[in-house]
Amino acid sequence: MIIWNSRGAANRGFATVLKDLKFRYKLDIVVILEPRISGPQAERVIKGWGFNNWVRMESVGFTGGIWIVWERKDLEVEVIVKKEQFIHCRLCLGSENMLFTAVYVSPNEQRRRELWEDVQGMAADIAEPWMIVGDFNEIRSPLEQKGGGRVSEVRCGRFNEWIQQCGLVDVESKGPFYTWKGPKWQVLIGCTRNLTVACAT
Image (cartoon, rainbow, N blue to C red; front, side, top):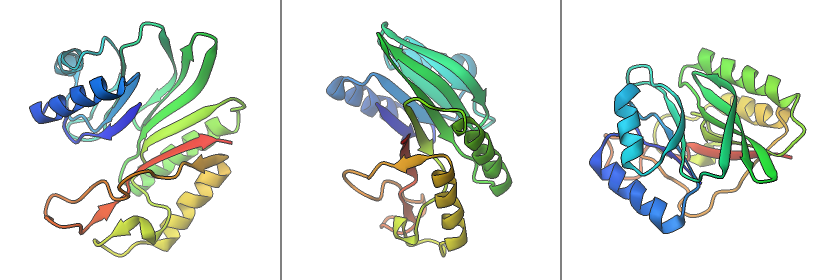
């Protein structure tokens, strides 16, 4: 599985890299965030990558958007809840199944709180394996940002409290810690670990 904030999925260079990763790692599921395209064009792009199945929350202009795409015929994806900031579903593979939530959380604080409330409400009723992945547009501590503006420790605290209230565990990072840099910088300034993966306890 790979989760990728693409910031534009129609780019040929992006397609080349994704196809290579798909072949090299035999990916079962790909989650694309911020694809910046929708409708028939989105379907053409997904099929061009070699995936025949998908669930999408369309972008609003150039903002947001979540795609879950897969190729395996024996994988069933049952959508439970689909909203602008997340897709919550059940993955079934033979006799095994788990809950899976892909999120792209708005940078707007008020809308971000709406997502937190939605997921916290779902978490209260979940008693089976659950994974939530995506871009939360938040960090857990100042150590997760290098350069850029000053980190709000109050916001970090609220995010950590939300993770705890949902009964989630942050999966530790592997490989390069900083995975993103702002478009204006040629050096590691403004980098954040903006991809968080968490699973239910």
